[in-house]
Every structure is written in structure tokens, then in C-alpha cells.
Amino acid sequence: MAWRIALVVLVLLLLSGATYVVSEWQQALVTQLGQPIRMVREPGFYWKVPLVQTVTFFDKRVLAADTGFAEYLSLDKKRLLIDHVSRWEIVDPLQFFRTVRDERGAMARLDDIITARLRQEVANENFKEIIREKREVIMETVTAAARELATPFGIRVMDVRIKRADLPPEVQASVFARMQAERQRI
Image (tube, rainbow, N blue to C red):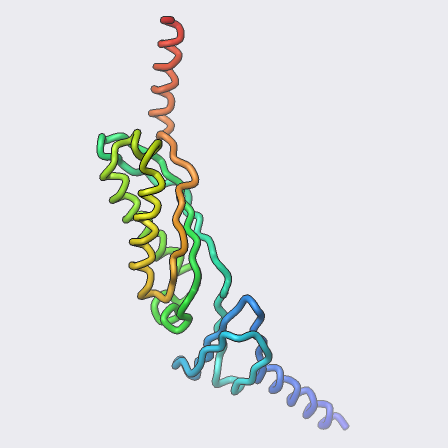
């Protein structure tokens, strides 16, 4: 009797290790001993060989990377703190797995790509143009360049936006002091 219960438990454990479920918002990569054998993009219930095959899940949804402030230098040598956000998606799970492994690795690569390209674009424009007229053009240029550079990682960059652009705190203080002095003079 006890051996039958043990046998049923063993069979249930093997069956649970032999199945996996891909949700609507996921895509999966099945590897066998580290080598990719198939990609699953459709939701459903699937079988795999337990203990030999492993399943890695990737998000199909649009993901966002919000990196925080970084300091940039404009063409007229003004320092600027810019906080940007990017929206991206995994389009080739196999290439994504081979190059960056997971979302954390992808965000690190994307941050490097976008920050470098944004630094280059900000350095080509004057401070006033960045704040007033050229912001949209800069974002389109950075998005196009990031999209091209992220393609080898199995990633499609959909959009890069500047959330906020500020002067560094010490510059803000001097501008505020100058404004106060001007007001007092008037």
C-alpha cells in the first residue's frame, strides 16, 4: 500500500516537471542541456522532458526602462540633468537569451546605448534649443539610433523620451539668486 502511494507521488512529480504553461503575455525558450531547441510564442499548455529540458520565459508586453538622472553637457557648455525613459519589447527570444540573458541585462545594455546616444545629441545642441525647440527632434534621433543598436540583442526600442530636464542643484541656486537680485534691483 505504501509503495503505491510513493509511486503515485513519484508519477505526479514527474508529470509536474514535464509540463509548463505559457501565458498570453509570455513567450518561452526551451533549452536542452543549455542548447536552445524551440521557441514557444503561443499561449497554452506544453510538454518537456523533465530534468533535461528547461524553460525560460520572456515577456511579450512592452517593457519600460526608467534609469534616473544623468548629467549631460550641451554645445554651449551648460550642464544639464536629464531623466529619460524608454519603452521596448523582446522580438527575438533566442537572440535575446544568447546576448543579454534576462531583462536586467537588457536594461543595462539599453541604458548604455541610450545614454551614449543622448549624450552625443545633447552635445550637438545649445541649452535653449534643447529645452525649447529641438527636444522632439533629439528624441526621434535617439530612438532611431537606439532601435538600430539594440536589434542585435533581439530587442526593438519603441520610444525614448525625456521625462525631465533640470539644471544641476548648484546651478539652480545661482540662477535663483540672480533672479532674486534682479527682482530686488527692480
